[in-house]
Length: 228
Length: 228
DNA sequence: GCGTCGCGTCAGGGTCGCGTCAAAGACGTC
DNA sequence: GACGTCTTTGACGCGACCCTGACGCGACGC
Image (cartoon, rainbow over all chains, first blue to last red):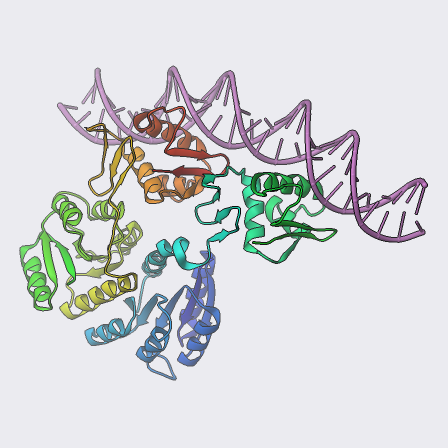
């Protein structure tokens, strides 16, 4: 889910934005001044910032600079002022876009999408860890591929889903209930036989010696654990 | 040096832009219609495109789509029309920014700097992959051409669109939902029979043995994958 | 030593998804 | 208005996947 930080000191604008954004399945944080905005940005790591330049405690351009000191998060500036100077200043300080009030909600949302879209290509690539290697096989979460000895291993959707949950929790114990609910849906939780069958499939396809697993470990009575 | 492609059919606007840009040490190419614009983009690989939507030969949004088929170069749209709809359309087609005429040269230049600045972290090594080769055929994303054994293969718009999405994600699994939404629109997502039909067409036209595909692979229950 | 419980393994059957073909519908061109 | 092309839709067969039940084994507790 995409996280948006909205910064504006006019409550009605914030409310309008929050309502519209939440309706479109964005996760939204809001700040009414620059100090709070910078704190929230640091703690919540938004994917995009919507920033009003007219804040009570500090100059909007200062907020931009504060953000740009440590992050490249897209910044979409809102402002009542039309002056060309202001725009140039904000953009050169590091803003990505500049919209003058009053603005159309459709347009703002489209610009937001454009800003977010620009990050995407680099997401699946190197952003977070997408490949996990063991001495026997390699899992590429982004490409949804498993390679074993130079050959791609074919996994069924259920096998993949299970593997994905385990790999994302590498080293941690994942309870049977959690596995069942993540892979088969919230209404499952006791059908541990499903797990037994599919863990066996994964081990058969990926473990060197399926009956003595080194990576897909059973914690009797509790759940399973994936280890590199 | 940063290379800019200016696309506009009004000579005086082009002239004004070219003068201003050259004065600021940009390298500038110019086109007066969509066809020329796409050709120049393919041959010159600009770092940023300034695009007027009102072109004589084709719809501006089509030009955006044509570019986005193979490159992520920033696109800054110019338009005389203020309608919110137009903006949303252009931005959702893949434009990065939208400026309405008449515009201030300062502002335009600032937005241009902002657009260019965004690509910097990924280095000047702009290696847009425009052609993909397999032992059986070659796909040229920029020219929108597929060559097989010296002959160009005729693809319908839908076939091409599908191919484009797959090739852009070479090696990665693309989910059925993603394919449907990218090719047929956001409101599609379950009509997997479309995919079956069109994948069959692509395989018939491009695979050596359509019933045993080597490049357009099915991942049952999940999606499709293009491999070189 | 015996029963219970949890886990691993295997094999069978129902169901679903995919590939294929064909025909009808939509669209643009002449 | 007729034609050709592209897209959409439906029907059908086949193979693969998922579920299920049965059995064996080892660990543990009584």
